[in-house]
Length: 170
Image (cartoon, rainbow, N blue to C red; front, top):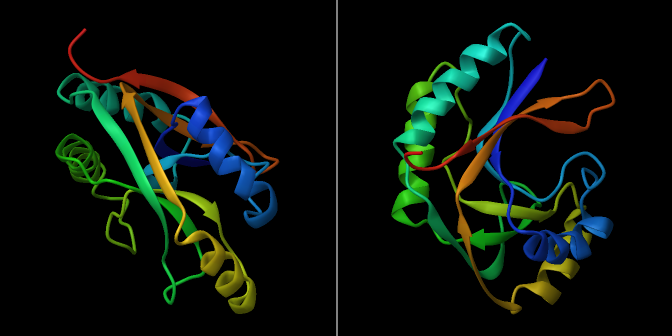
């Protein structure tokens, strides 16, 4: 079974991201727009309760923060993903670092770049066209983030929430 840890932005930002994802992201139907804190990893269903307990402790020691997006960027030439660039504020970086430390057995191939994917698995020509049209788009969006989620993948490939964790002391 696959698990992952994400932040879901507000409906407003999800609607904006989905306006592009419908055309440019083959995972559109599998998961809502999100910011990944811990990439998908394999584990047993029995492990989920332990993961939830570990994440609950992290959430108590983390602070809510403001998610800010200002532009569209790309991971090209590493891959042809296009994304909303999320400002790497201190609280977000600290939350990611704590999760990465606690789940160090689940390594990532990439450095943490806070983002919300709006297009992926594009051909080189399609990437060039789409990114060329979008890269000058200014997005001035800010919103409060006070929770993150442990997800698991269903048999049909879609993702659903296993548990939600509120940031800060309750």
